[in-house]
Image (tube, rainbow, N blue to C red):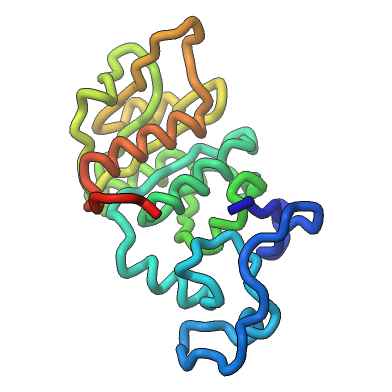
Length: 223
């Protein structure tokens, strides 16, 4: 299915120039299902959602996800308005992460999220200290993802089930304060000539590592 290309802060609408996606108006008579949105039934559903949620209202989708979200959280430091934040949020949605945290500036670059943030729970922290205090209160270990001295190979670490994976900005990485407070610092093993990988890619690898370790993954074809 071809993805949509909504604007950074715009509604959940496809790019008119993109190939048509989703489904058109639902044939009459409409199903008797309170989860369905009458406007979508009448006009069609071109949103960036899986087929299971076609015609569902946003509120119904969020409620359904809430019933099966994973206890994993992911936090992103937003010190430089990093364009990678949206991609991290989009991956968090794909893995049904319980919530994503924005640390630093409240306003963040949403373009890469492809509107998936509308179906996620967002928690804002004005600074690192606020995130650290929240994690301690909620008894959620902080796991910093950064290739720094002393970092343990992600491939050989069992991630805590109720943890917060923390990624930093592209370039600077995770802030010193969070590295200092982290319960665990892990890095992704690399074998090429570069010393780092894109922060959104690193976050995706870390989240998937948690999924492999803790999620109930059914066997058989995905589709």
